[in-house]
Length: 136
Image (cartoon, rainbow, N blue to C red; front, side, top):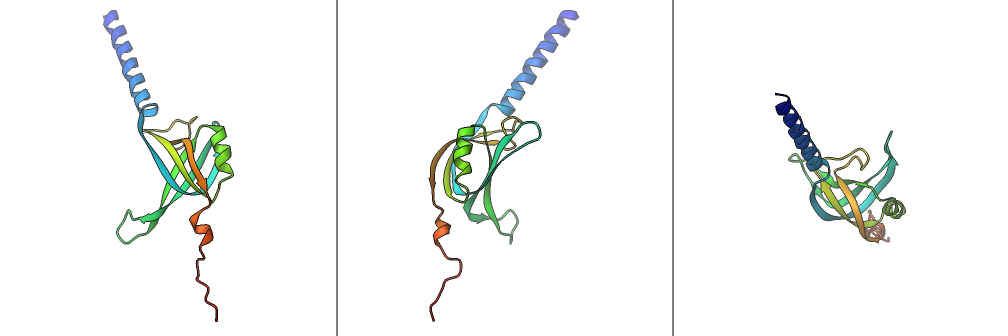
């Protein structure tokens, strides 16, 4: 009986460790997102992490008749990438990311983690006037 209990505990611990690894360390997807960098902040009570938001062009509507912009919320674990993006607020950026199934407190609040900056350039919206000016 004691041997069965020991084996059962070991199996349960291995299964729990496997589930934890799968939820928090298994890379579910990788990709590239592009848009205007809205903000980047370093925040947290115990673990200070970099969190940001990218505003993508176009609109999506979760409910019929509503309008909402596409927003991509992400975390950054690399301080050098965060320093570069910190200076690019309001600019058009292309970011490569990894998607995890669940976030970890020391990795960030988002399940999307930026791993590379592909491009930073002036926003296309900076050079457009919102109200066309007509000379009289």
